[in-house]
Image (cartoon, rainbow, N blue to C red; front, side, top):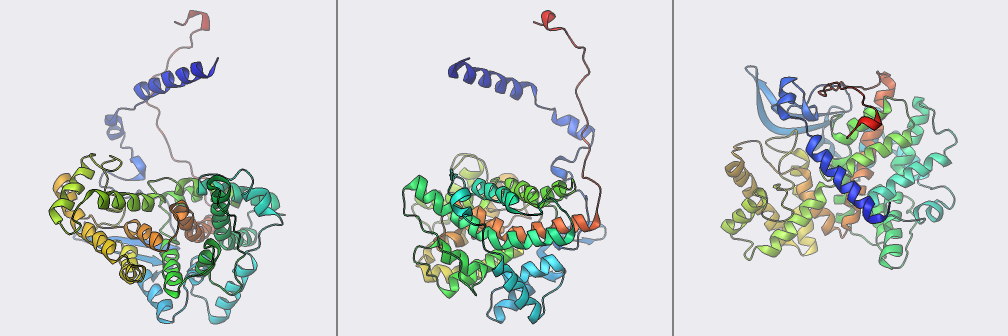
Length: 452
């Protein structure tokens, strides 16, 4: 079979699968299947309990679910209070958030000092790891590069398979510390081998926060402003955790329940996060808004913007997906608290970067899009900007390349994944195995010589 014949075979049977593999939607209703583990109203099916975080998007009044302004709690602490706490003390917050998520309480001064020192002491990668792993056959996709590095770290771990809490905690802290290096070095290797640019590998700075080190390692001159580091740290805090039901965290629970090793569980979560429906959404927002700005002649003309938004929903513009990226959320309805917190600093950063007009355009789209969605989709409440709407814009203003947007999400979310993996192991639940009902009719086996 030659190459052309192989392609013909694949095309033929791919079309066969599309035609004959589709299950009738009525069957999902008949058997009351909760597609996406969500009921018909979009509410998630309860499959577990957690003490790590809580998302509030509604209140119950007279037995009815009533949408409310979104709230997010890390270990019972309102995310707004957490953010205001470390910002008012003029310090970085991601390391504190990691401690809180892992151990369930805010660190004391001594615990904070010990934990930040532990993170710093765990940043070292194995000898020649950058050369032998990251720079060997570097991927054009940074999430795949990160996954390869994490799986390879298994080979350097003297006790990779033990799932005692002590050992998994050791592995988790090491991964939290090393994710920024794996992400940035993977990108630098991509630039060198695929874009023919100079190779720059900056070791992390002693005494610097994770956010500071990301900027230090990523930039050729290692320079950054206090505001840049502060906002990147804030973005890491806001992305660190978002309940057990988000796709990548639930993936971690599922895989952890099989008692596999930490590296495999984390890579499973990375594979989930890579998807454009999950961690890749902020890239789509940046690309969509860029397309809007190129095709709208007057950024202050509401009518022109509305017409373009309608085109997006009618699959007539951008990627023709029918989506306005960054608008709406599977859980939040009236507001995403993370977006509200981040937005408070976007204007300040835009002014520093000379991109105030772009910020105004983002704000205008944020205001107009829910109205257009309500008009076109007949949805009159519960649509608001989510964190992806602004996070990609923030990253672009920080001069971070789009290739690294999703790995940065992973650098934050590894804290939440680690906390949930430990919680799953501490509670020693059953292996997660939901039911699937077969809707195929039984048939007889026909000998090969009798088939047509």
